[in-house]
Image (cartoon, rainbow, N blue to C red; front, side, top):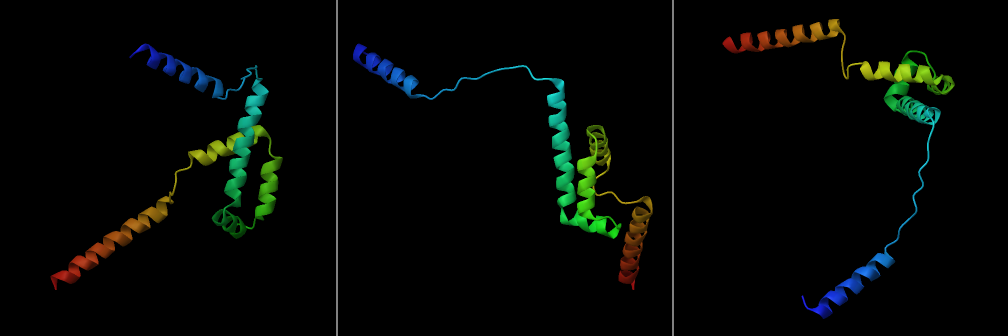
Length: 122
């Protein structure tokens, strides 16, 4: 590169650095109570969102529980109770069925296969 090209490149870089917006960041210490309440609020919001789903509301109504009352109860829970409930819900298997229903399903599938194969032999 010749001298004029280097000079022009330097001027361009300086101009771009001046035009580039920047913000001043501030750092500070936060207490553990702020961190704990933040996660508790997130868990409480997740539970409230779960109760807002239509399928959950219909299940609650089948059990005789008013969904609005359930939301109020979640809001009245302590942070420890919310954390415990969230952990218990998270530990549940997704889409699981009871042992009796699983056994019945296996028997029905086996009977269907047996019926299909015995019908083909004729």
